[in-house]
Length: 221
Image 1 (cartoon, rainbow, N blue to C red):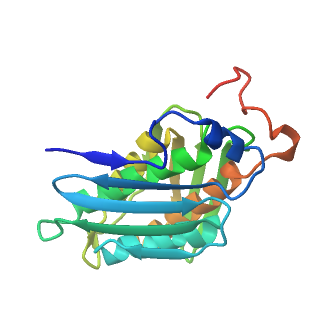
Image 2: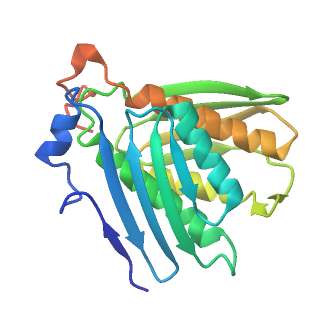
């Protein structure tokens, strides 16, 4: 199976333009297209947006969750995807996560000036979800959701973990998700995406006190 991923620059390494974007020159944007034998995914992201979202993945519940990321993260997001959903939603769900993760990484460039860490606890009725993340350059997911049903509508709830695995690996972040309470599957998942969005917003904001430096004592992420 062939995979083609096109980025806004010719190299996966941060370019001079990527670095300059982290010096307070806004907006920080990127576009990534990933094409495989199973899916074709196109993502455009603006980390300094207003929460606007256009999502058309063929997976309605995933579109709903992408809107949560954009709205609560104040990220402008465009996601277009076609995939083999006649088989199931797995490939499309995963490849949207991969492409979104790549777009996040490109928009952040060398991560100079960002706060780097983010955390949030989101309630949604009886559900309470805690998310903490670190744009550390080291992919790791600690996933603690206990979703009681196999499906929400037609969406397989096992795919929530697969989506975040894909983002973590390709945005090079550490992500911890904890379920503090909740019995309704929809509420648990939606609160997770809202908490992730707010954590993402915190972590990617520019810290004016070190806008010209990488947020690490090592000097590199």
